[in-house]
Amino acid sequence: MSQHDLVFEPLLGKRRTVRQALLEVAERWTKAPIEDPGVRAALEDAVRHKILRGEIAGELPSGTDAAALARAFVAALVAGEGLAAVKLLP
Image (tube, rainbow, N blue to C red; front, side, top):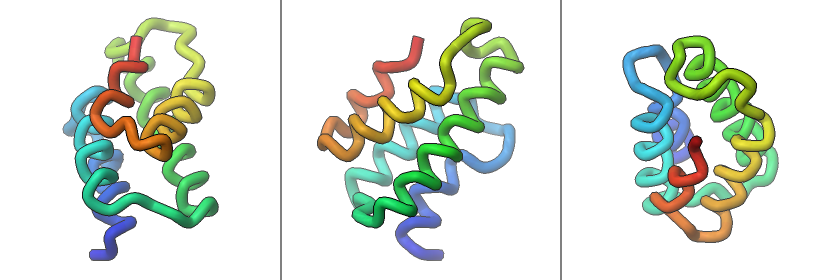
């Protein structure tokens, strides 16, 4: 499994809550930051998808702007905020 795969893995499946998945992504990012802008964009899309699933499951408020939240989360990771990036969740 590549370093990128390790960062993406918590977003797969339905067994993790949104918060738990993003905490794991942030932890793994701190160990292996992603430099490639294309891979970062793919991560943002995967995070957006997880947020949408969380909204459907009732974990997040209805009307959550998944795209903006995903952008902010990945931007916080890039800025070196690590686990603090998860505090962006409503």
